[in-house]
Each structure stands twice: as structure tokens, then as C-alpha cells.
Picture 1 (tube, rainbow, N blue to C red):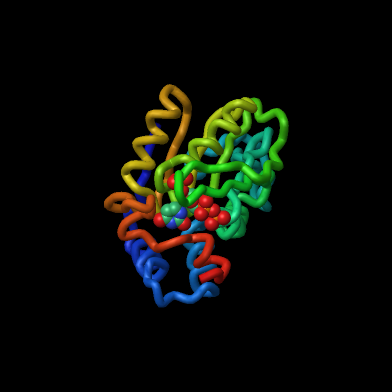
Picture 2: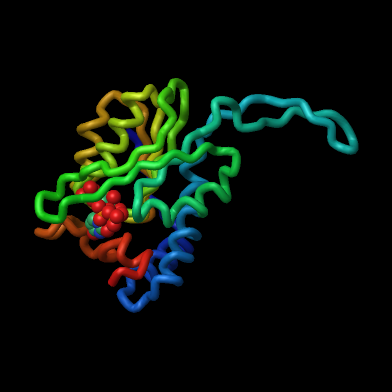
Length: 210
Ligand code: PRP
Ligand code: URA
């Protein structure tokens, strides 16, 4: 598994505002979208392309285009939905599938309440969007779904991650082609399974339920 932790002052600046408890939902949504677009640049580094010949007004030349089958982008509802626009801005030709998951706040186990994905993902590159990688339960379950349907490789974009979650995913996906692209790798999880220092509950902050 490859792990890429962003190291760019613009990303750290936006993350700092996102973490601040005084940041309102509209600003939180805007920053989430901007952060995803910046992280998506790194996350799509290995997107499959094929050569094409085109004519410029001056001559013919060889370029590339994103190849078939199209990449699949999968936001994990609810909070991952706040990342979708930022991602498809950079990858407009991608297909979008959905997974709805909620973590039981007592047991920290995820349950899946919605699934809308293509049946056959053979040879598909998948990009999973979830702002928070805490215990890794939700992202791990999402990756299982996709690999069981034949996904070729999975890149997850998370705004924040805890070392415990990264270790859990690494153990689970051993031998598979997985990349994590993280806005920041935080210190730890607290006793309630929240990322520290973190940003609180991403879904609540995105959708104003606090
Ligand atoms: C949050 C977050 C992740 C999950 C992370 O979602 O968006 O999906 O928790 O925790 P884990 O790594 O321990 O599984 P939540 O279940 O709160 O649902 P929401 O997006 O509807 O708020
Ligand atoms: N889910 C969140 O939204 N925040 C955390 O810190 C952990 C899980």
C-alpha cells in the first residue's frame, strides 16, 4: 500500500481553517471542495491513459486521453458527498457510484445502508472519497465491496487520517493495489474513536447538524 501525505502550505492553510471550530458550514463545504481538488491532483497521478494522435493548427502530435473503462469515483455517504464536486471537477469523465455507511458511535462498527455501484468492476480504477479515516472500519468495508466486484486498484482520498486507521487498512489490503492520499496524518484516536486533533464530526460540520 502506498501512502501519500500532502505537504503543501496551501493545503495546510486550508486544513487549519477547516479544523477551527468557529468555521461555519458554508465555509467548511467550500474548503472541503477546494482541498479535494488539490488532493485529487496527486491521487490521479497513475490514472490509466492511452495515446492519441491529434492535429493542432500547426501539425499532428501524439498526446494522451483517459482510457476505457472510465474511472469510478465512490463517495462514502454522508460526509464523502461533500468531496464529490471537487473530485469530478478534475475528472469529469469519471462514472460515479455511491456507498452509504454509518458508524455505530458505541461499537465503532460501520453499517452499510445504501449501495449503488456497477455490478462488474473488472479492470476499473476506483477513487473512494471519505474525509475521515478514523478506525478504518468504513473505508475498509468500502474497499472490500469494490475488490469483491473486481476493482483493479483503489485510491482513497481522505482529508484527515489517524495512524490507527492507516495501519488497519494496510493490514486488510495486503497484496492489493491500494493508495491512500491524505491531507494530513493526525496524532491518534481518542477514546470515542475521534481523530485528534481532527476537526470533529465531518458530516455534521458539512451539513450543519451541530
Ligand atoms: C464518518 C466518516 C467516515 C467514518 C470514519 O462517517 O465520514 O465514514 O465516520 O470512521 P471509521 O474510520 O472509524 O469508520 P459517519 O459514520 O459519522 O457517517 P456520516 O458521514 O453520515 O456522518
Ligand atoms: N468521523 C468523523 O467525522 N470524525 C472523526 O474524528 C472520526 C470519525
